[in-house]
Image (cartoon, rainbow, N blue to C red):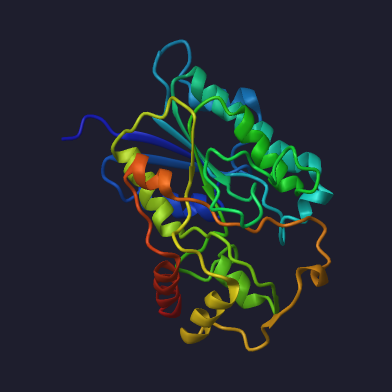
Length: 295
């Protein structure tokens, strides 16, 4: 009989948090709990500390891992961050910094789902060692990107996973493929994207191996060989999940409130340091579309 389980707390029951919870709760060696703000105010420092730490009667924390999947993304998109700047910084910078610091104090491994939308341009595939050019120090970047980079700058420990344009196997409203299907007007860029199924598999590996994350580390978690938008829409049409009204236009015609990040990220660190190689973006999108069409 098992005498010890790996105890995991997931913060946030949104797109990524729900996927991750549904996977980890099926793992025999893991005991997982998932909370959302409507059930538990994790933005309150005193409440979250009580949640993480057993208190004076025990020197052991309640959890081995805390995985923060919560944050401000904006509805329907990051333009909302320009209207709610204080809330954007609160949820993307200050609240997760408090959680990360408490994990450090109480010796809990911390994993943070972040964003790769802190670079822009095609000079190269951006690595984790490159200073973000679309983040906190760039006046032209979005509040969303600034707030994500600000967290990275100040974070004291843990594994920070940068994802971009996440997609999955279902017609979830936050799925990049679902968004494309619902938009009539599209712009043509090559951008790195993240297959959520593989992100969840990687986190499961980290947790089940009980990998220690006491030092700060940042990793780009995106699929290899990213496609341009038209290559994605061609695949979607082939698998019967297209939109006959699609029209490609210049981004200026969208009248966006915030500038957008358009770039590709390097995956070499993920391969070399963590021995984890994601499938190519084309293969991942094909697999997701097959699963979506079978829903």
